[in-house]
Figure 1 (cartoon, rainbow, N blue to C red):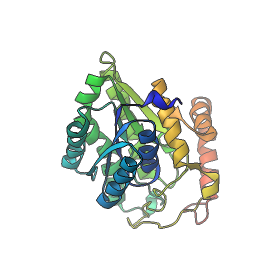
Figure 2: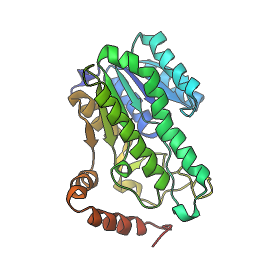
Figure 3: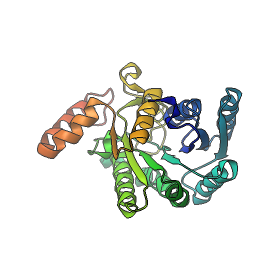
Length: 273
């Protein structure tokens, strides 16, 4: 996309200290956006902001645990204090999981919902008046798991479906206010979210069962999301698997079930066979 599409826009990004969020911060600042970054790791945020500023960009940050309502409010307040408004709110912070529901401690599902769903709700609540004023964009970074249930990832799929339902309702409520709402669905992406995915007992798995070289890069995802914002798309599907899932599910949902089961059962150390 043309570099001036985000030029001068105030873009708030959660989960900005690593992975897709970090790539967005760098890429959008290079496009001329004023980026406001939130994540739990303050030292990484500060270093990233300093890097962006040293390269001639504009950036601000606030340590943000999206499961805490007051942290999300502080992130939005930081954007207003630094740049006077918000044009794009990207709810990117998220965690995953990998375990059969049979074996799962229910606290893991609560944790997934707190981060992936409630983090989106809290940030939207405080950013919405400013997005309505700017007729800006509200973006949720979902997943193919938010289109079809992903076996071994019950909490992840549930939280992403919940995010989608929430954002679609916000879109309908704001039809007369010029608000753009987009649900972005990357496929498997080479980012830290897989290494920190929770196992059945809530501990981090610490490794990924998938080959990094066959995944999208975080930078690729950042570019596709930027194009989606520029085109004010409703749904941003990024890989052939995601587009195929969305299409085939309409006509042969049972086939999609079988394909997902087959593919996920072939992962190394798959929790089911």
